[in-house]
Image (cartoon, rainbow, N blue to C red; front, side, top):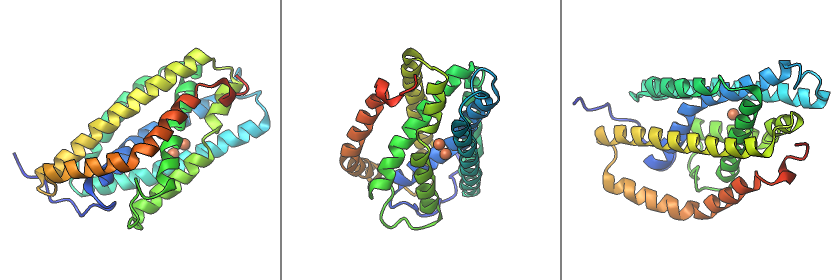
Length: 246
Ligand SMILES: [Fe+2]
Ligand SMILES: [Fe+2]
């Protein structure tokens, strides 16, 4: 087996946290395409968005513009991963195929799924912006700036798709089922992509198993309070009060 090219030094303190964000970036262009399409279809739909209050429609259009700019930024980010010798295009293509299957669902289910993806993204974004656990203190470079900007916008528009789903009377069962499905999708894909990227680093001789175990232990200890907050936020999504118009 050919040894992969030596990757550059991790931009986020260590390999684990660097590759965690790199794995997320590989998922984003397709994931964002899914939520953009759901919101764009809502805006055009006679029964849902066409007759909705204008302020909701304005927020939906602003949401689409923000997600499109995230998409552009992450395509460039992923292109840089590809130039470093990582199988970024192949991994992106697999995510794209998986997301395409979700695109065939009806609009209420796609809205509920998009709202769930946005909720999960916002939960993580809050933790990323909170301190140095996920983005290290030294991470002042291009990637860290991109992530801070993206996370701030995710927190800022976290309510938009949820409000659209509520205005379209998406009910509890669909909301809860889609949160579970979105969590499984995201969790499974992040672990799969992260494993693939870290294996690449190990094959290139840039990372040893022992060092990775140490990084994992440190991250688990530091992230535990944040993971607990995220768990509570996950449950909070199911409260009727978080979807007032449903
Ligand atoms: Fe985004
Ligand atoms: Fe978003």
